[in-house]
Structures are given as C-alpha cells and as structure tokens.
Length: 253
Image (cartoon, rainbow, N blue to C red; front, side):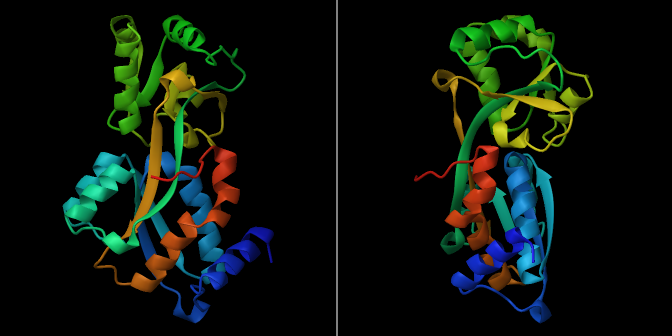
C-alpha cells in the first residue's frame, strides 16, 4: 500500500469515518480554483483510502457561488470563507459542516527558463511590474480584483492597464507556460503543479492579502456521511502534508 494511502486510511479510521469499499459512492465537489492542487491531491488520497469516487469541477469562486445558488447539485464545496458563509446564510451549505482548510497569499510566476526578476521587496515588485510586457490574473476572482486595486494603490494602475490580461480562472497560469503572457499574479497555490512555469515566490508581505479556503456540505447531499468524511479529510491537520508544500498554511479565524 502506498504511504499516502496508508496515511489517509489511518486518518479516516482515527476520525471514525472510514467506509467500506462496498459502500462506495460518487461525490461531486464544486471548488474554487485557488485550492486546485490541494483538492486534486487530497481527493485522490480520499478515493484510494475509502473506495469512494470523487469528481471535482473547478471555477472561480463567484461562478461556483452562482452555480450553487442556481441549484446545481453538489455534495461538497471548497470556497473562500466569505463566499461559503454567504451560501450558509442562504441555506445552500450546512452550517454545522463548515471547516477551514487554510490560507495562502498571492504569488507570481513566469515561463520556465526565463530570467527571474526580483519581487521580494515592494520596490522590486513595482519595478518588475513596470518592466514586463504583460501580466495575467484571474479576471473574476477575488485575487484578481485585489491585484488590480493593489496596482492603483501603488500608483501604477494607469501605466499597467495596457499590460493587464484578465483571464479565466481555468487558464490564467497556463498562458504563461505557452509564452502568450510574460507573468501571472494569482493565488500562489494555483501555480504549483502547472508544467512550464517557474514560481517567483509570494509578493512582498507589505502588499500581501491572504486568501482563505474553507469547505462545507450540501444539506441536500445524497451521500451526507461520505461528504462529511471528505470535509473532515480536507481540513484535518494530517492534510498539512499535502497543503504545506504548496504554501497553504493553517490559520485561525
């Protein structure tokens, strides 16, 4: 048995949530894009440990929210806490299922092999922004909205406007790998695992914002116990073995 599978089975057993393969079900997850690498890795471990099948659809947070509000079926959702909390108020997500996964800041990436500019200081980040030809960001996501406001706050919004390339959440990192765009600024976890890009690091702490990830269960889920087990698996400390290497850190609200 693979080590990751063994760890997953031990975790679920310890939580009293390990289901027999004969009881396997198919779960549908609707997730924001920022947590993509973590959700993919952890759901795969969950599948191996339980025999359940997990299908995950990724969109920017506002689109996930719209789909849930419109009645699209899901068992589990992973979203930024404010978005999840609004859905809880609407009764679309069970309040007693809410669990925090972690948080991460904004990072930047360039095409693999390209010269790496310095973004470690405010001045370095500003100089880099002004020197590049184009920068992608998630046009509809919270991180993208913050990034545009940050450029204005730094006094370079007007100069940067012709260089900005708002992209869909599904493709904003990949355009850098193809060379279509010089750089991407996005939730840092989104960068990990994308071939053809080099991570430059997080933007300076003085400019940083923190994007949280939380999870919850559809109160109308057809597989409530398995869905609860998945949210526990995503948000319990042993998941840090997957979360920390991609920069997602625990946080207390």
